[in-house]
Amino acid sequence: MQKTPMTVLGAEMLRDELQRLKTVDRPRITAAIAEARAHGDLKENAEYHAAREQQSFNEGRILDIESKLSFAQIIDVTQIANTGRVIFGVIVVLINPETGKKVRYQIVGEDEANVEKNKISVTSPIARALIGKYVDDVVEVRTPEGSASYEILEVIHE
Image 1 (cartoon, rainbow, N blue to C red):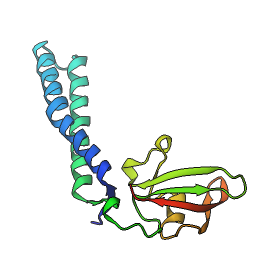
Image 2 (cartoon, rainbow, N blue to C red; image 1 turned 60 degrees about the vertical axis):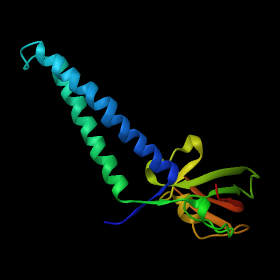
Image 3 (cartoon, rainbow, N blue to C red; image 1 turned 90 degrees about the vertical axis):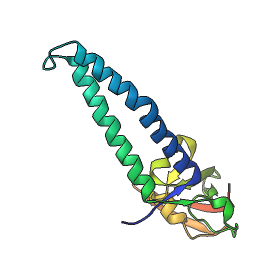
Image 4 (cartoon, rainbow, N blue to C red; image 1 turned 180 degrees about the horizontal axis):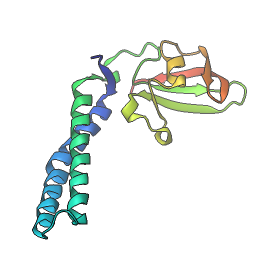
């Protein structure tokens, strides 16, 4: 299977979530199942069924995170020389020449993307258009809403 790019912070966040799921949530759910079992008839025991559903979700998420981490290619952009080229993990400062509006995005893995925090997925239309370009390049981005032009003002390795 193909490696999936991930930032150091993204991998750390997944490891933290995995630790919490295994050491906090799993024992709590196991205790809830045991308590619900003690209440008797399992067929009509809503607490038992809810706890089993939580357990299923928790175990599925653990497997999902373990799989993602096993196929992760963790990229520490601070260890890569800044040549002004847009690569995975960098922060890109753009300006729309038509409106003069500046935007700042970090290009991250799919699981790390968060528009409110200006973190865009490496597979997004904007990131795909930016990857490989350099400072001062003008990039045409095609999105479902239409096309937009951006000039790359700055590439930051943080």
